[in-house]
Image (cartoon, rainbow, N blue to C red; front, top):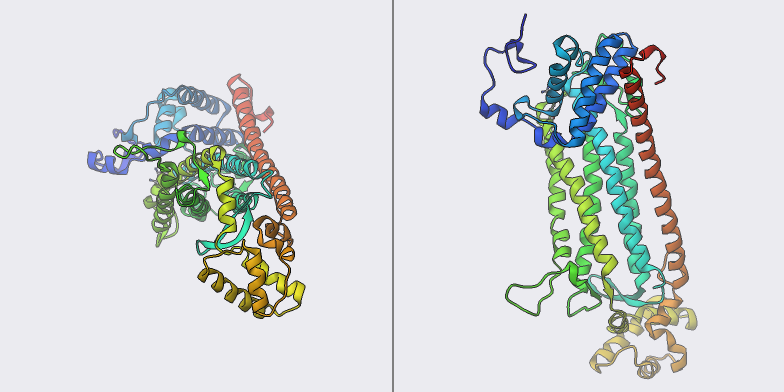
Length: 503
Ligand code: ARG
């Protein structure tokens, strides 16, 4: 029986779809970026069908020839995608059927469904994009580490509650961000590994009666393993939610860094000066220099959270198997990946070019009693007093200094006040009231003390190197699999048989 419909699924329908339905339901925009992956998936599938004797070599060859043609179009940017054909899968299948004829082309979809196809394509694409984001992340970490190098003795105020707390070093501040971003890298890599299972061959939901070899398609697509359970493979999207959660947490970190750049570059703080080329002026106030890039990076965190919430809400209460709802998995996933990569680039650019105003940092580090904790510590270690008692002594000393409009920098007055409070101390003994001296005394594991911070720097440089190596080995595995598929395709197109093809 001939199919009169323009749709590949048109047999049971008496009417063509209405424009309102097609417009609303097509997914071409989100699918377009998976064209190369859809072709690769089809190549792997059709090679497997040939190896398993489900299709003949001649049928496989005819289909592969058209897929190669489609690939050339994708690479040249000339593949015409028709929204009336709903998605990338239908568009490419139709392309093959047009080129190879229904007799041959119509066999491409044997033992396959769009349900396993779409999640295979999107996982292939996600894997690459996660590696791109990881590269951008490593770029930012490298920038932070470069700016931190040699700054272990450059003092600045450390804050709790956005109030002066204790002096820290610039290297300590910057490497703190690197440490947080390291966990982001681990989460992204874990999301990659979760996505690294091949759903192809699950078919619509129940598997198939054809003797398929799912391990072979997984190998040809460079997946680490097969996503075995067919019903789960087509209907679950937690893998994408995991990627989006990792991206959302990463963006939270980027927003914290951006906020610091906004705050620290104010006139009031004046510790950082952002590059002119990364800031903008006001249309009315001639003197203004606005940290717009940092503000936007801060603001776009909401967009990223939106992507995660969109995905979570989409999945809620869906019954087992594929539901059309999950077509909407891709727009937030692509948007999240794109946004993370962009924001990482923007923040890295600011970090690379910002001026660190170290004189102002040092001035602020010494102000506002930031060395008070060290004075209390000294009373404990040098005078053997209980910490609570020392806390009280220093607290009342600070209150006196505030009343007198003096600071802890005035060591002579501090010594006098200590004497009044029952502690005799020489001015020379109180050198740690200087923020740099105070900094140098910190020595616990992971502290802001220069040698500890230097050690943290070394460990982070090594971790960055290891993370990059992990990502590179995954990229190589993907490239090897791509090469394996391409060689097999070439072999068959040259007239070779699948029986003597090494897969
Ligand atoms: N465009 C669809 C998506 O992105 C492909 C799967 C369609 N499956 C179906 N049974 N209609 O989810």
